[in-house]
Amino acid sequence: MPRPPPRALRCSIAMKGENANPFDAAEQFLAARADSDLPALWLANLVSDTLGKVLQAVELPHLDGEEPDDEWNQTKALILLGLLAGRSHRATMLLLEHGYDAEALAFKRRLVEVHARVRRVTDPVNGAQRARDWLRGQDRKPSSVVELPEGAWHLYSHLVHADFRAAEHHLVKHHEGGRVSFALLPLRNVDIANATLTMSSAETRDVAAVIADFKGLRINGLETLDDELQTALKRWVEPRGDNAADEASPTPP
Image (cartoon, rainbow, N blue to C red; front, side, top):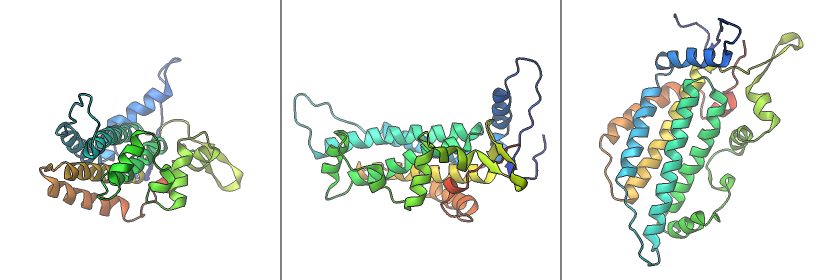
């Protein structure tokens, strides 16, 4: 099927029977196009594999009645944060493959927080205490540790709650003459989806690199990966800045 010229991909779903499910049809249509629509997808796969290999190389010694030292606490925190990073990144990929661009940003939000906390628990001065605090559920709130403009963080936050702005901003389109349309079925904005994939890959790459550095591990092929990431960032992210959350408003059919 030829690629349509508009940047916001519109799905036309042919109902083949009374029991045909339009969600299944739209998801299958978009998933079949994912490789051609989302060139940043292969890079996202490469980054998730890189993080997986780093985590596989990290060991947490068994404590036989001993009190955990600072490095043990930091290592445990990094393993758990690495798990959250990997699954958040993969969830972002799966949602974007199937046309749920706005929903993918909820996992991008968690990945931003994971990245911030990974840097906090590896801080050379306060990292050990921060790791203990985080493992006890007593570390600072997400909004106070992430390095994002307040407005961007709030846009991400709306998506993880039953906030009217999550629907109004991402799933509702206002047209001339007062007509309003709503996006219930999955849709894909090619530029926004690739930008989100690229930013998620960059966050995940940084999580892997910080964990590897703290544990004295070497990531093979990191320079090549970084070159690919820089190319993707220049193509998909830099033209609009880090505003995927603000722009991910699909156009309903």
